[in-house]
Image (tube, rainbow, N blue to C red; front, top):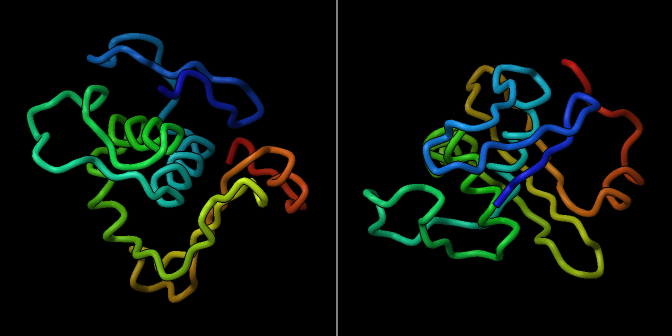
Length: 139
């Protein structure tokens, strides 16, 4: 379960209740939208089929525990993650491994007027920050 997130230079507490009635983050902030996009797209986890009536947090997932937690978090905030992924087709990927400690995926975007590709990367903070020259905060 995703319990805490860091974006817009602050730690946010995620709502871990099944009915999403607990603590709430600002899901309209630009920082959240960027984090949510990365968690949804740079992720190989998928829900096992035949669970349409099962609450999101109780669904079984094909994938490791970390990616399953991110998938469930995104499904609760974004909606249908598989549909979102279909609109932002993955064209290339470097899967997570214990040596690199990061994962990279490259996507076409749903914006048909933009022919650029989107690169998403997630992993161990020290591995990600070593490869960054800027940090996205507050839009």
